[in-house]
Length: 348
Image (cartoon, rainbow, N blue to C red):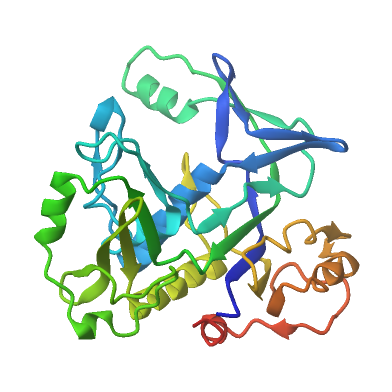
C-alpha cells in the first residue's frame, strides 16, 4: 500500500456556536485560544466529532453503537460494539475500561484524526445583548405579568480552518492482545458463524502471519461485513477484527463525501454548517496533517506562497484543490478536485 493516509484541510465560514462556560449568570462565552497576535475562537474536536457522525447518520444511516455503564462509567459495549458491526467504532475509535470478567481495558485509537476548527480572524471582544421580547409580548397580550430575561453572548463570525487525517493502515483493522480469552468473550465468538474461504478472500492482514493461522468467524447481517480471528501466541491470545475490503472502501467514500460537501452544525437554532469554501486533499505515504499550518489567508484569499511550500513535502503522492468562495491569490499547478472517486482509485 503506497497511499497510507488521506488528509483534508478545509476552510468554512461560520459563527462561534460551540460555546464555553458562562462568565456570569447571564453572560455566555465562546471557546477561545490565545496566540501571540490575538485571541481566536474555536470549535472543539468533540463538538465536530458529534456533528460529523450526525451527518453520516443522516446521509448513510450509520447506526450508533450500543453503550453500557460498566464500573459506573458510560462507555461503548464491547464486543457487541466492534469495528465491523459499527462504522462509528471503526472511524472514531473507542475505549472500554473493563472487558467482561477480566478487568482488562480495550482501547482503539481513532484512525480519523481531527483538529479543532480554529478561526483565521482574531476575536475583537464582540458581545451582543439579547432578551426574550417575543414571549414577553405574548404574556402581556394574555394578561400575564411578565418581565424580560436579558442575557449577553460573546460573538465571533469568521472563517475557520480544520483538518481531517485518515490512517488507512488502521481503518478496518483492530488487533487486541489479551493474556487470556475471557469466558464471556469466548461464548460471544463461538455464537458467530465460522468464516468460509469466500469470507476470507481478499482480507488484508497487517500482522506477521496470515489468516490461515487461527480460527475465524464472520460478522454481518444480510452480508458479511468482516471477520474476527482468534489466535494463540507465546504471550497470550490475539483477537483481530478485520472489515471486508468492500465495506472498508464504502466507509472511506462516505467519510470523504461528508467532509468535502459539508457537515451539519445546528446549535442553539444557529445553523451555519461547516460547508467548505476551500479545501486541499492529499493522498499521502504517511497519515500526517501536512496542509494544516499552510492554509492561511492573505487579503481574503489563500496565500499561495505558503501553500506551495507544503506541496514540497515528500509524503504527498497526489493532491487536489477545491476553490469555492475562497480562492488562491494566484494560480499554481495542482489538480482540481474531481470528486471522491479520483481518491479511491489510489487506495488499495
